[in-house]
Length: 262
Length: 131
Image (cartoon, rainbow over all chains, first blue to last red):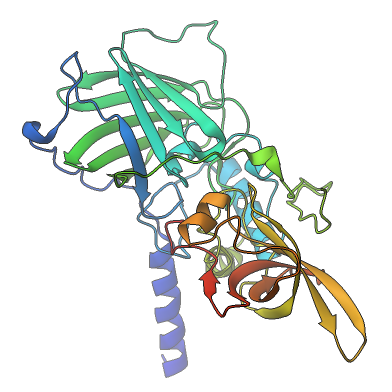
């Protein structure tokens, strides 16, 4: 093998490794000593307050700039993802629902591009996301969805406490499940399992596992890390329709309106 | 799709995505992250609004004797606020020098990289990878 070939192979391998993503969840961080965990009246951890994401805005926050999530997709959904990547390559990002101000779904909202604020009371952990002002309600009072439960963008979340860990399952998502800006899309059978835990005085982690019988050949797992915001940090308003200039064009891509509308 | 095309896709797509990390709202693949344009002109409008703060700057071409209004898209209010921008940072009539990635389709639109104000202050488009 000559020098050029060696270089080429080395480069392709490096790129390939960089793109491999993380199909296997990182080792769950250790739980914080009980003494540093603030507790609610029910004795469970109370994580009330504002939290900011650590890492990138893909599903897996540990991906480096230029890397993208690459879950093990079924042929149909891999073909859709490939088509989206081709469109990006052509400088024409696909019709991402969030570009036209549809809310991100309950999986994508957990990318927490902007901060989140947690509110708790016995039987409920509510996660308020600054992005589009979406609220996830994780019910821990034992209720379950039934045949009449409506689908919603955030999905229907039920959970329980295992010691100081909050374990939740979310199903019944509404809308096209586009999960990142590269156009990764799962199906209406998408389910999200979460394991939240406090790993330090000001650190929360959430290990997420996605399953989807139609779209995923095997579960996709990743761990989110959040840091408590500094004292005085305030949530801001984010209303997407305030001045959105990115319509979905007739060819299904995302456009940019140059002329001021107002 | 054959193996060769897959490799090509895998190589190119990350480059396009590299500049998109600070935006929630949509991919910035319509902008050419490999190119910078310098827009020295006068602020026509400054909208400190979501989902994207935007600046329209009027750039004069002295040779041709014409002017062009450039639409410069930035991050969200949150993103720019974290980078030190405020609603009062720019107002119509201010002179400004903007560096931005231009639209691939040749229209006078671009994605903010940084801006230098009349007093010499330079503000970035975001506060790093996180916002």
